[in-house]
Image (cartoon, rainbow, N blue to C red):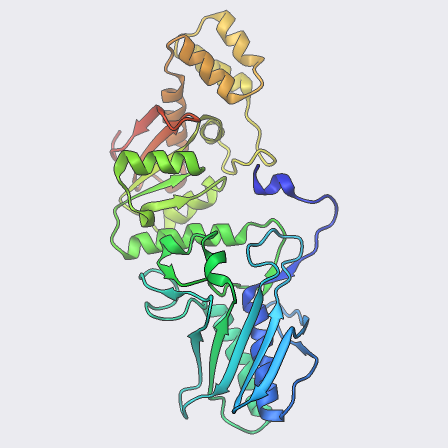
Length: 368
């Protein structure tokens, strides 16, 4: 079952990113350090002008440092960090250092180039860093002091949660990332997934990889990894976001791309769909049956394909007749991909069945 298949009915609640929660906790801590006490709630400014208010899940002020926690509410989005506690510790930093950041428990550290923060730095993205710095500088000005603060962000249990994300293959070790560009989680926008696709491409390029494979699911990922012996950093879990991934590659190309997936998903790509999700694109069985005719099917077989219920039924029909339908679909999907990236990369398409067997293939060389 896919993520959107679980989407609740009706109007959905928005939520707050880990970056917004960390900003609120950091602001509460800085206020407590300078005013000598915590407020029960804290309000922050988001980049888009929104001003959400957060309740603190914990707070303490002792030994010259302040600590506060906020439970992340991702709204109705099935975010892996929904319900996690974002805990921030703030203490005075060295004079002249400004606002600096450390990774606490459950927050990862960057180990590979290509991400928007440097190797060795905590995995706290630029927008949350700026949001926190802006909030703390405003508080410091209000108290007529210089903003020199050391910020440690922790997510208890974050290392285990990170195993459900793409952080490991992006070279982020030890936990989760502090993310967010707007501070707001839009339900089922899949922004974190798309961010992972872009980050995966960036890391692959920065580490000198010349061949990456973008896959629609776990079966195709395992199959293409075995076929080429690719490392995890060369594997991009594009899911249904073929168009978004290809458009990003058009601006950030690699030498060679393999698109790998199941027959149904890649048939949609071959038919011109760039979003491959069942709720957002529909396979045209008439066009698929016409392709079957192109590879030599008789009228009875074509009619049977037109009335099929699933793409796999048509694939099974073609295989029983010894017809190279999957190869034609791979070729058509490759044409669509090349059109998006303007032909600037060598592109290959590999189609696998549910058992991970290669059933169709096209391309691989720039001039194929």
